[in-house]
Image 1: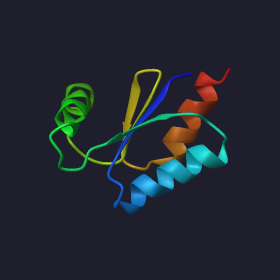
Image 2: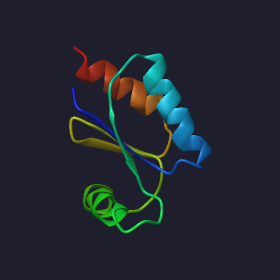
Image 3: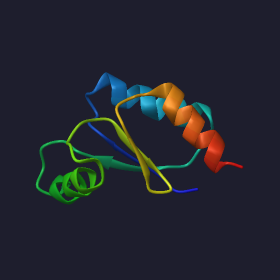
Length: 82
């Protein structure tokens, strides 16, 4: 299962998402969407796949969820782990 998260380090919802994944002992790739020149590529990926720029965003095997929607995230993780 490939998990990618797109966050801003200062965003509390981004931190909650990281805590949830760490609690579940899941490995994930983390992309910082802060205002830096290198984050433009990551922002473009989020925009292409979700139609918006927001944080946090999680991609689980290329299925995308915008925002910290814990129930949806849990459902998708359960579905993908079977």
